[in-house]
Image 1 (cartoon, rainbow, N blue to C red):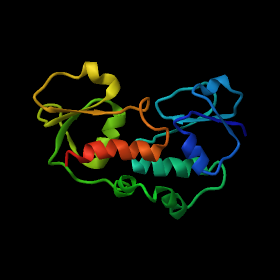
Image 2 (tube, helix red, strand yellow):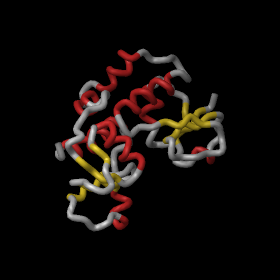
Image 3 (tube, rainbow, N blue to C red):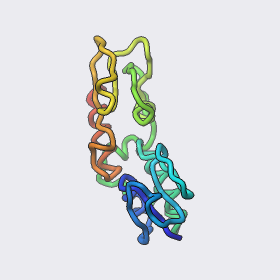
Length: 172
């Protein structure tokens, strides 16, 4: 099977034990049987769409991709999380519902739900938005919190999670 993945998903493919794959931002430009890409992306070939916004999504994505090779057990996957404090901490959801936020974008919504903030579009203390929507954020008295999107962060999903969660943890 010829696998093609995007740069943002390559680390998951590698951790899942797959060694024979191609990397291309546009998988349809390659000869392939299966594309492994972020769930927001679309391609013409058969694909496995994964999500990498939260530690739980990352865990499940590694598990799913590993089924294409030799399925990893939970303990083997947890080994990859060692050294990533916030990834380990937020493998389970938390309750920080005393913090009310307005959130722009679905990828951030996943993170906000995982971290346990209350999403409220009328009464909120913080507006959380991705950097690419900065000019679309309504002016408000709430504090603005800009989160780097995948175009401006590390390709390593653990490092992306650590960076984004560290910004949001400052609100707790």
